[in-house]
Each structure stands twice: as structure tokens, then as C-alpha cells.
Image (cartoon, rainbow, N blue to C red; front, side, top):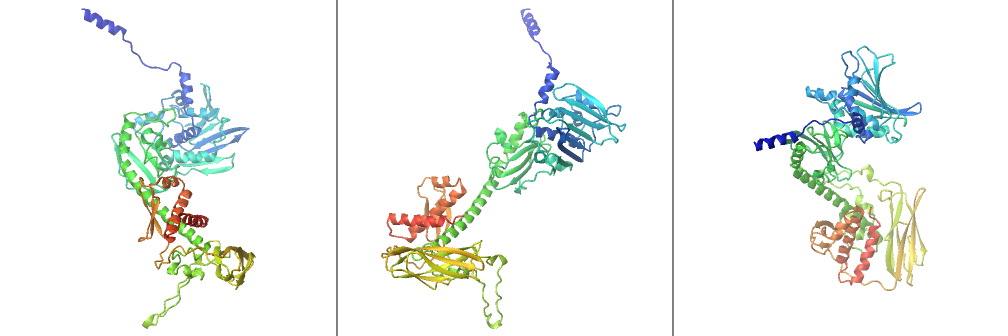
Length: 606
């Protein structure tokens, strides 16, 4: 008996019931203001038109009677009609959170995005008033009017000569803070936000910005890069996940968006904590992850409900991350190889330019000319490297090899600059040295035709022989001094000048290296990761390659900036070449040479 009494007391103390809205109007206010992005609100209006099977949508932004407005006109099915054949505006206004589209989905309709019945209330964050116009079965046009902050709505007849097809939505006046809602921004936003919906429906969306006097057509956003066809199909228990991913060069602006049923939910997948690492944050991927089974927060439609469906989506997408990481790693290796080749070309050109400026007898290191001519041929015509092959006897057949014709881009343009080679040199007193004027066009191609030369000494003494030819001989005076020679080259009305500095001394620097017969070209370079070691670079003479330690802290620091990395590698080149070509020199002498070579080389880095 006691037990039964206790049970009865417990049953009496237990209460239950159903949740309900305490203040309907307050709830409507909260719902109407839950959307925070005016562009997202415009996208929802456009989606309503697409759901109504519209083939053409026109968005107009302008001013009328001193008030700004936004008008959206479509040729869709219009507002569903009631039993009297009139647009059922009453249902739209009195069934908030109970959309007609939800019922259509229950009955098997597909391709419809809306379901919450609150999208129309988004006009509160766009303008003060809304007018919705649609035709009835009687051929008359009906309008529903709503005001921001008011629970009332009115339905009136619209005066028009002809019934309108589809629906016209007018928001007027726009809120004062919406100056940024331009036609161009609407075009950009819709192209990304509704990309797949536009593609699949084939709807034509035109934007007329009468304020800016411009017109735009919304084209579905196109992604850059290579489409990854090799990705496997990703399936979860709740459905298939569609991937459209493109591999591009690393860029901080690249992102993979998340969409549902063709409408973008998140601009960047990394907004979700589960996907903040690579490959999604690598900057090498862009595209779309389409997940049709996710549930969204009704207000903003940009939030995801983290239920079991979301958890299963995360698990399914994680399965392809390793494959994406492998693809990105291959891409980065290819990019590094391209960058290394380009950087090596840049460094070689910079050293070639430096060797033209520096004294030949001190920096006669490598066979940098084509055809293994060596530095001794530098004062001969540099254009020999690009010379046209001469006809030769074909032997017993009597045939001749035809002359190879230059391409049009191999011919030099007009004179643009002149350099003296060498630009800096040392000459003993009472000795002589030859110099050459190197004339070039804007693209640094040697110019050879229709040139006149005039050499002169503008500082110091000494004498010049053949001062009106391309190659001049300088005869040093009998006293040490610093001399400057200038050459003026003319081609028609074009005149350019180049200058050379000559140090005349009574004691030349001692020969610091023995000449060798092994005249190799400028070395290449490669990387070797030795993070725990202090060496920055090594020269391997057998391969004529400079090995760079890309695990050194200095390399890691320099790699943060492309220009800094180029200068760092250039200085490593200078270090290794000075050490190789000045054996037996003191540390002070090597440092002096390295500073000199780095100075004239880095000037030509581009």
C-alpha cells in the first residue's frame, strides 16, 4: 500500500505540455531580422523566381521620385492561386514558417530550394516597403503590400492594361545604408551564390543599374585551374557528396565552398573547424562541395545544423583528403621545378651582365658564350651566338644546306641602350686595353646595323685609338689615376651613351689563381635538405652544380619572399664561384671579391 501511494504522488507531481509562441509578432520580428546579409536576401528573392520555373529574371536598381528602389521581375508561374483563381497572397502572409514549397516537396516535387516560408521577410534588411504583384485567372493584376515593422498587409488591384506574367517584387525605399548594393556587386554575388542553380535551370538573369548607368548579365562563376577528374565518388549513408574541385597555383584567395542543392552555404569550407587544415587550407584548391542532405539554420541559411548527417558528411569527406594531399604535393613539386628553372635563368643572365662590366682578366671564369667560345670572344661580336648558319657544301651529292632563317622576334629593334664592356677595369701605367660598345634594343638584343660610334675621355688622361669604331683601345698614362671613358652611339636620330671606369695603377693585384683548361658553363643548382647542419651551399665540381641547403634557417627565412629568395641564391652563387676561382686567397680578399661580384650581379636581377 505504501508503494502505491508513492507512485501516485510521483504521477501527480509530473507535468507535460507543448511549446508554443507566446508573442507571435515578436517571433515574426526575430525571424525577419535574422538574415544579416542584404545580398543573401536578394539571392533568396531570385531563388523564389527560379523555384517558380522562371526562364528570365530582371533585377533593376534605380531612383524614382527621390527614393531608391530594387525591382525583380520574372516570367515564372507566379504566386499559386486560391479557389477563386486569385493569387493566394493571404496564405503567403499568414503562413510564415509553413511554406507552400514544403508541401510541394512532401508531394514529390524536386529542384525547389525554399522550405521555411520566411524568405520574403528578408526585405526588412533591404528596404522599408514591399509590393508583390502577380496576375489572377481573371486577367487582373493583384498586389500585396507590406511595411517593415508592421504586422499588417493589404491586397489591392493593380492598374495595368495587360495582365503580368510571373511575379514582380518591388522594395522601396531602400535602407539608407545600402549604397554598396550596386548592380556589379549583385552580379558578382549571384554568380557565385547561385552558380549551380543558374547552370541547371538555364535561367537568364540580367541586372540593370540605372544609378550607375550600367547593365550586367549574371554568368555562373567559372573556376580556374585543372578540373580533378580522377577523384573517387564520395558517398555517405544519407546520400552522395558531389565534388567539383580545381587544382590551381597556390593563392590565398582560393577556397572551396560548400553548397546544398546548387545554393552556396559557406564561402569557404575552412569556416568549419573540421576542415581548417590541409588540403582545404592549402590555397591550391577551389571549387564546390555539394551536399544535398545537410540541414541548414532557417534564418541565415548559411549555418549548418551539426546533427548526425553533418557528422557522417565529415567522415565521408575525410576519406579523400589523403589523395588530395598527394595531388597538391605533386603540384608543388612541379611548381618548385618551374620556379627553380626560371630562377636559374635569371641568375645566369645576371652573372653574364656582371661579367661584361667586371674586368676580363680578373673574372675570366666560365665559358658563358654559346658554342663554347669562352670569354676571349666576348670582345668579338656577341651577335655571333645568334648568327645565321652559312651555306655549306653538301659533299658528293652537290646539295647545299639552306640558310636558317631568323624568326621575326630574333631581329633587333631600334637602339635603346649602350654599355661599355668591361665597364670597370684596372690597367697598369703605360699599358693598353681594349673596350667594346655593346648596343642593344629594348629587349636586350644586340643592335649591329646603321650605328656610328664616338669615344672620348671625360675624366683623367690617357689616349684612345680607333675612337670612331665599335672597339677602342685605351692607352694608360704614366701616372696612376682614375679615368672615365664615354661612348656615344647613334642610329639615325637615336643617341645613347655608355660609360666605363678605368683604374690606372702602378701595381696590379697578384694573380690569385692558376688558369685551367676546364672551362665549364655557369653552374646549375639543386637542393639538399640538411636541417641539422650549418652549411648553406657547396660546389660539386664534377657535376658543375651548386648544392643549396634548403633546410638551413636562412633559406627558410628567405623563402618567405620570392625576391629575397632570388637574392639569397644569387649570393650563394657568388660565394661558391669566388671560392672556386680564387684559390689561395686570404679571407679578406675573398670577401672583397664576393662583395664586388654580388654588387654587379644583383643590379641585373629582374
